[in-house]
Amino acid sequence: MSVLIFIDQTEGHVKKSSLEAITYGADLAKQMGTTAEGVVLGTVTEDLSALGKYGVTKIHQVANDTLNHLDAQLYASVISEAATASGANVIVFSHNQTGKAVAARVAAKLKAGLVAGACALPDTSNGFVVKKTVFSGKAFANISIQSTLKVISLNPNSYKTVATEGTAAVAAFAATVGQPRVKVTTVNKITGEVPLTEADIVVSGGRGLKGPENWGILLDLAKELGAATACSRPVGDAHWRPHHEHVGQTGVQVAPNLYIAIGISGAIQHLAGVNRSKVIVVINKDPEAPFFKAADYGIVGDAFEVVPQLTAAIKN
Ligand SMILES: Cc1cc2nc3c(=O)[nH]c(=O)nc-3n(C[C@H](O)[C@H](O)[C@H](O)COP(=O)(O)OP(=O)(O)OC[C@H]3O[C@@H](n4cnc5c(N)ncnc54)[C@H](O)[C@@H]3O)c2cc1C
Image 1 (cartoon, protein in one colour):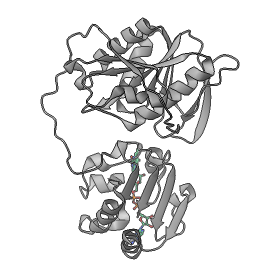
Image 2 (cartoon, protein in one colour; image 1 turned 120 degrees about the vertical axis):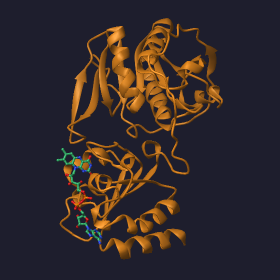
Image 3 (cartoon, protein in one colour; image 1 turned 90 degrees about the horizontal axis):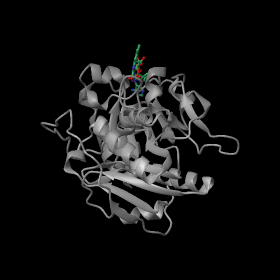
């Protein structure tokens, strides 16, 4: 009996959301009186044993190049094999793009109950009850998993990463890696920008910025903060900004530590993609803009005056 955490990596580096999943899995293991182990797929360049400081005692690595790119079916079969071999009865994923694609497949393979989008440690005092966000973060549900095997995917940014002392034993795991059913032919990398889903800070613009020619003030602020940039859907639709920056219900869902919304009204479909951000700052000239209700800090003012002043203040 143990907790197995899927450690997600990109280009050889462990993702930040995986550190949260490891801390969460390790705390859950402690609560259950058991140990936490990790499984990592593909070639990793960083020192995996150092992840022991987040609470895993052992990491099973399947260092097969075929697994360097996400193939949900392959990943699910390898992780299921690792879970069975390690005797895990809880498997933890981050609820990111990979976790969303793989966790449900693992649950189906192992006939395990799944809670996708958990936001707190399960209550194990009487059964196994997992709290998750529902209705785009507007409410919570407590779900009881009845099966022996359990799969949980953890919402990014909902559990604090804690590093202490410790190293993990890293062992090669000889899994059966089948033939991938999809082949990555080209990768078009957006260089020089902070990836939106991994960013600590996101600066986002809406129709209030009037046109693409005005984006310089937002880009200056983002550069000063080392932030990723995002936009509302109409901005993406009008091609003022690339589509991959569109956040919201129908776009990318983000959960940074700080989300700065400039000239965005705060429609429910926009909020659905950003309301898990730790701190929300809204800059809008209309004091009645709905976004202020979801904001931690608000500045009522003209973005063209406020944003350059904010950038200058940060610079100083
Ligand atoms: C099915 C469906 C799905 C959708 N999915 C998404 C989604 O995923 N993401 C998304 O963003 N939208 C989505 N939408 C659209 C959404 O409903 C809103 O229309 C959209 O978010 C509005 O974008 P906006 O806030 O940029 O523009 P507006 O609503 O036009 O708001 C502009 C804001 O800028 C302010 N402003 C104007 N000038 C200034 C200035 N000089 N300084 C400061 N503030 C200023 C205004 O007061 C206003 O609040 C969806 C809609 C539907 C129906």
